[in-house]
Length: 155
Image (cartoon, rainbow, N blue to C red; front, side):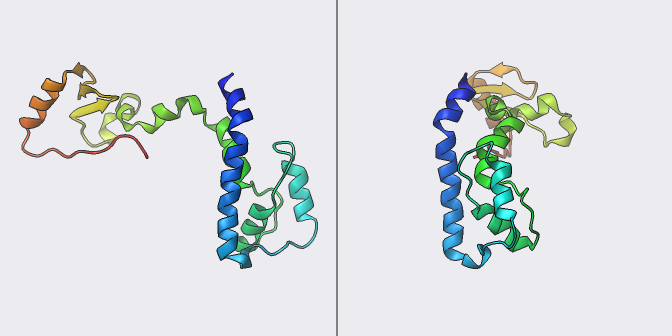
């Protein structure tokens, strides 16, 4: 249900965002947007139209002119981030995946720097992932001579 509402409401906005991005690139680098020879643009539109009715060939021209490879299968960035990425990466898990506080729970601890204290949504946890109070966290930090702070959420 949530994904359905998202697609009806936000997908057109995401598409506009990425089309705005390609227009900015085009404004400064017009040499990357020459019309392609042959039927590449028609084939490109036909291929991607099932995802979205109005296909902009700007991404195809950009990719093709930079790489020198003509291929109608280039994925337009606006469609990739609006449709494909959402199918490959479930957005319901994105907050969880982006918070590095959980990595040592699901991956071997030895591949990460030692974590001595975590703050997850305002709650403090020790290295064993046991919840502790703010006062305990404060005392814990004061006992250490040197502590390095590292943000755990990608921004």
